[in-house]
Image 1 (spheres, helix red, strand yellow):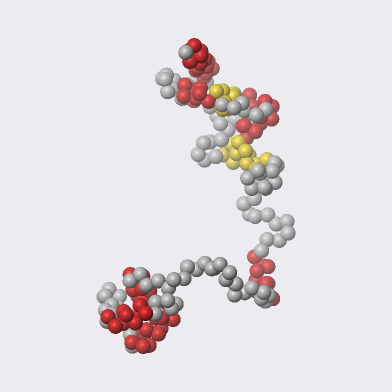
Image 2: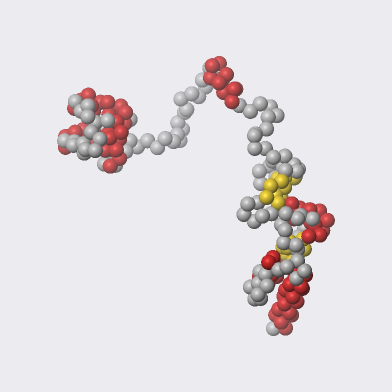
Length: 214
């Protein structure tokens, strides 16, 4: 009946609605046998019930207090053998495991992400990912002060040497991004970067001084 509408008699529709709680395959087989409707396929029958909003009432979820059908039943040796063939063995690592020292470059911000042998506070794993430049900087200088961020001095975020990063006030970033000037720090020539940084720091210090006098 592809391409043509299937016509149902009112009494057929009433018969289906009265039995809508039955499983669809079972109800379809009963309908075809009772009404001699071999032209109605199971897919079309399901679509009819959906259009009419004749739902079975089943959600596919366990109801409170419902006991699983296999509770207390031992797994057969055949099934167990199939399961063991695809389970992780003791000490086996997943194919995407990355141990301590593994590095990758963040595709969004360009920072180097490194795996270190420290407990992950969120997952409890024995390793955790860190930004390499920050991790190395903090090993020498301690935690980044509150309200500060690390700024890459030469513009190469892959250069994670601690001396290539400076902790600056977060409020300094708009000035380095040329919000109030025409020179953006990251786009400036290497010989101009120190001057751009110095001017931004002076502007920031002057702003703080003016604010303190108010």
